[in-house]
Length: 158
Image (tube, rainbow, N blue to C red; front, side):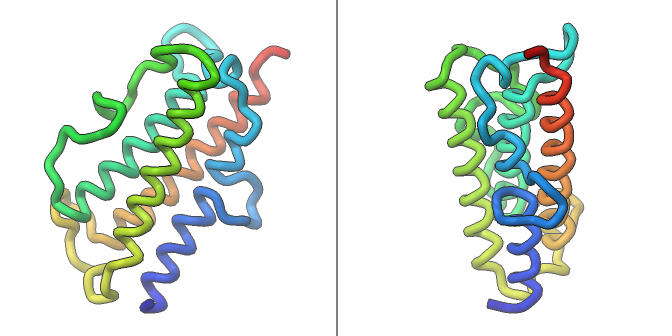
């Protein structure tokens, strides 16, 4: 694997689930979150942890779609960007949405791992960003929402 592709995978993985120096990554931020905590809202009209998880999964899917040129409309949870959650409260639904996030990460990661080094400076199949900018943006997006989740965990009652 080309060193620059390996570096992109390192960024994706440390932002999502690999050990990182900066504290919890996205997967670490949701570790131990219960369905009731995931569904708690800090105020009416504000997003909860559950919605942040599905939102992160959606944008991993969008990045994959932009890399591959796949058509819109195939996100496993239906809808786009911000999906109201929970639709069906409970442990099974929460686990399913966490699994959706993990699967979206693996799918995107596999696509990035298969890239030749020469593809990184090119524009993605759709959108204006280069492949490198798109992938590093996903890592930054994961860390941004990991921080939000950590804050929501501290704000939640109990």
